[in-house]
Every structure is written in structure tokens, then in C-alpha cells.
Length: 240
Image (cartoon, rainbow, N blue to C red):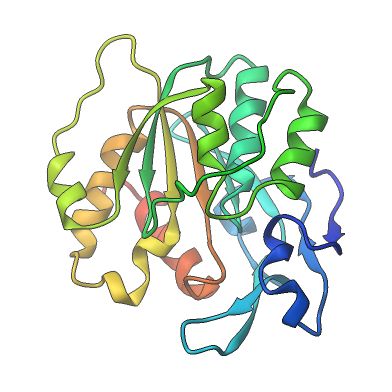
């Protein structure tokens, strides 16, 4: 899946946001490539569009490609809109990287725990999972189906200084399987009250303990050049 780029044209998934009010009726989903830090580039296609809190329509470009890479030997996938994480969790399960009942470490400006009325019941069939993720999920409601199905057992939410302090010394128990689910909007300007070093420290603590890392660049919530820059500052030279 994601071998070819495509467009959402119907009011489904992320394209359902304000669909009836938008002149543009489609959103772009990039293809995925195997690569490294140098392959993370901002694209030119519109991947998210909605009205902000001031009722201004914002058309957001995302990544040129999703990028599959490894960090310290740990599988990592970087994509734009966060709902795609759900597909890559099931893909990792299909490949034997993770099993069921994982602990999701969700580092994000938002909880993404909106209810989703749709149930994911085709977890063995990745094509069906792919359709579910793109047509029946959006950036705010992709975690609840994973909780109901059991691939995720519990969620550790780190959205602010309270979460950073609460989990600063977290060590997984012996058989616990961690999935780090990072949203780079954690580095949006409105969260600058959390020191960068504190953010970086908590991310790397969990990254080093994780079996899988999924990273969203969240075009609607953070400038993509800033997102890519922050990603590199955190992961490219972790020893610094």
C-alpha cells in the first residue's frame, strides 16, 4: 500500500472537513519511499484543507513522499497526516515487528482520541486496513479503532508540561511493547513554553525503548519546513 500516490475526492477521511464549503474538493496522498533524513522534503500538493479558528481557509501542503527508514535499528515511518499511523501499526504487526496489546506513547499537541463510529474488523487484510485509514478515519479519530481491536492496549499521552514531567523517567517493564507515535506539532510555536531540550529528551527516552516509531508532520498544525527541521534536530544526531 502507498506505493502510488492518489487523491481523495469524496467527502471522506480528512477530505470531509468543510468539504461542502471548499472550492477545492480533493486532497493528495503521497506515495512512500525507502530513504533517510535527506529524503524528507516538503511537497507542492494540497494534503489538508480546512477553516482555522478565525474562519480562514487554510490550504496545506505536506511531504513530497512518505519515508520509511530506520533509526538506531528501529523501524520508523514519517508521513504527513496522523491518521496514516494506524495503517503502519498494522503493517508492522503483519511483519512481526509488533504484536497486540502494545503501549502507545502519543506525543502530540492533541490527544487524537475522538470517537470513531466506524469499526476496523479486517486487521489481517492490509488492503482493507488501508481503505479504512484513508476513507473512514481522520487526523483526530484513528486511535480509538486500534484500542477496540486490541493492537493498542493503553495510551500514554504527552501533550504538555504535565505529561513531560509525568513520564520523564518512564522505563518499560520487561515484556511491554512500546510504539512511539510522535506528532511534530509538539514543536508548534504555541508550545514553545516547553523547553526544546525537555521535548527532545522525552522523545528520545521513548524512541530508544520503542519497537516502532511513527511520525506525523501535521501540515495543518505546524509549518512543514519547521516540522522537518525539528525532526532532524531530535533524531539525526541523538548523541548531542
